[in-house]
Length: 165
Image (cartoon, rainbow, N blue to C red; front, side, top):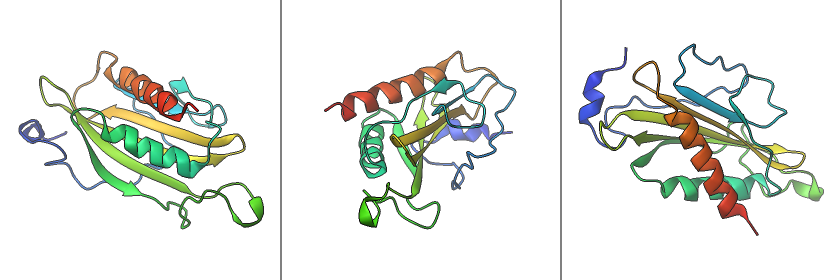
């Protein structure tokens, strides 16, 4: 059970240190208080599909961090810029596709009750450019009344707008 004293905290206060979400093999809970977004090539279950963006992973990573910093009541919990031991690069030597995976996690607190929800985002290289896995989940309750899906859609729309040429 999540500690209800978290509701008395602000920002990331009171939350345990984060570890990377292992998206490959991730099992979604039975409760309807999550939303997972991934590319069509993602083998696991997902609620929404997002095509890769025609940018490098480095560009998507920088844009993701800039966009996330602009959301209200949202604080970064942790960052893992080199999940596979190699930081994201614009491109590999010799013009090969970009390499590396990076992940960051944020907490967004609700305006009225201060409920903390966790957002994990992972950028991966894809043949078409850069793919995103985005997982928004509630720490409290069974249902979120669509809050996590709406948040995921808001983040995707903000990324689309920020990445338009």
